[in-house]
Amino acid sequence: MLRSLNRPGVMTITLAAAGILMVTMGTRQSFGLLISPINHTSGLGIATISLALAIGQFTWGAIQPVAGALADRFGPRAVLMGGIVTLAAGCAITPYATSGFGLVVSLGLLAAVGSGAGSFSVLIGAAAQRLPLEVRGTASGVINAGGSFGQFVFAPILQKAIQALGWMGAMWLLAVLTLAALPLVRRVAGPLPAAPARTVERTDKGLWAALREAFGDRSYLLLHAGFFTCGFHIAFLVTHLPGEVNLCGLPPEVASWSLAIIGLANILGSLYAGACVSRYRSKYVLAIMYGSRAVLVAAYLMAPRTALTFYVFAAGLGFTWLATVPPTAAIVGKLFGVRYLATLFGMTLLSHQIGGFLGAWLGGLVIVRFGDFGWMWYADMALAAAAALINLPIREAPVSRALAPA
Image 1 (cartoon, rainbow, N blue to C red):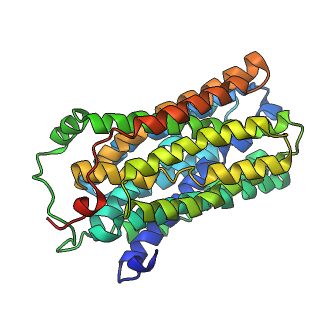
Image 2 (image 1 turned 135 degrees about the vertical axis):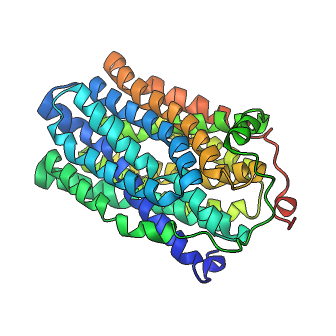
């Protein structure tokens, strides 16, 4: 499956992009572990802290098309470096935040802007422009797996750091670890090949014309709708799974290891999704992934709340967690080419994070109002089923025709 990447330059670009995503996503996806410690020391309340993280979910999505457009226009190097430094700054100043507004600035804005600028849209867009067409699907799966591996690594590290150093010391440690990704940028953002190995792209009419064309395409809008529900699902779980574990009377280690298992399982899921992009229509891959989530949530609600249940649930969900990214990016690339892929896929990620904002924020409101997350689980299940159906009418040529030389 990875043999196609074994050629000069291809593996270097792919692994460097995966390494950057490992750091930015690993850091960002572990913030849910901070809710209880911050609430315990500050007394700000779960709803207030959840709102700050929800704003971070939206901000992460809102910066994607902006960062993508800047990378498409000026190149990805400065965008990636600025994002990494901004993420580190957001982590470093969080311990000094003594109010809800302070958390919004540090976690909701700075950390979210930084991690968004060093995330999927810029990294996959930069890699796609520097890699041959036939390896892009597999490469996007490997890059995506880097983000999942980051969650597997960073969640237990952050939990142990909170126990050993306190949550403030843990945030400063995250800031230092984030800066370690800076040397990888030059590998991803090197000069474009003199003769890019890709099919003939459509005539370049400019960014705004590309955006108008995309938002006039029904398939692109359906893709947005499905990805919205994906964001709702992921943000709710990554933010409130520790709270669900606590409600069940289980130790916090169950939450951190559940998040780690999600990341580990998604490494396999991302690699598999990248391989499927090269063999099957991406819309069918997405429909199966979203449908499986509805089934898994239903199974979880009927199961006893034990540590084993959480671990099995995490493994099942993890397989499709962010494995939706390679087929989603593939559809955008097939519909509109790769010239403005960072921007167009960034817009799709914005839809994802609007759902993410609602998943994180409404989860906090529901737990305060009802004392459990029951209504959120039902909403998550319904949205996952809807997403599976929404993807089926997307216009997508068979793989053999879509990948045929022009």
